[in-house]
Picture 1 (cartoon, rainbow, N blue to C red):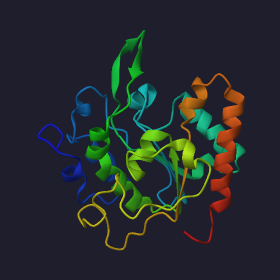
Picture 2 (picture 1 turned 180 degrees about the vertical axis):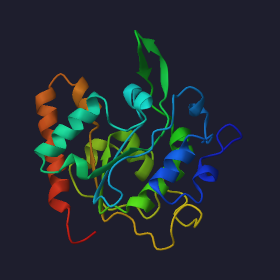
Picture 3 (picture 1 turned 60 degrees about the vertical axis):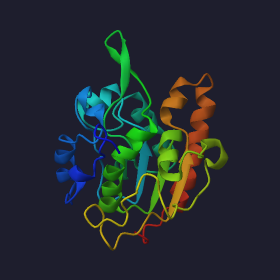
Length: 231
């Protein structure tokens, strides 16, 4: 952490409800991304959801709306979840970074730029707080940035996609697991993690139907792993 990127912990500490997290996130100065973004975009969905889906960062439409996964990638995700037998409304969805990072514009649309590792690290306490609030049974990681946030820089989607993995004992996205100011002492991590590709990659694909079918297949593994009596 540096003076420019002190990390979000000071803004997260003591927030115990989703409404409190959303309000506090608008004041977050944990890194410089707040300067250009319209607003911080915290996760959304049932706070007792069995499944949490974690992506990279809000996009252009999410930044304007203040809600995650409301753009084309979000609509494709809803479609894939439904085909996999998961009610999209039952899922809590969020991103590892809460402010939109972009580089210039194309017409009226701002051009997405992936967040760096330092942005992911600075934003980590927000994800920790969401995990503590929702306490999902399982987590689906959408793409490489989300995977690296949890498993570290060596993570590659293709090596584990569509297979159930254990939540790491020390998560890069959750450095404050032991800090009672951010996370409860009785916190239990997710029982399993399932990596897969990000829906935006499917949208960009030249073989979209095949890649969508693979995403649905991956999400079907998550659907089968959910235990209604285990959350």
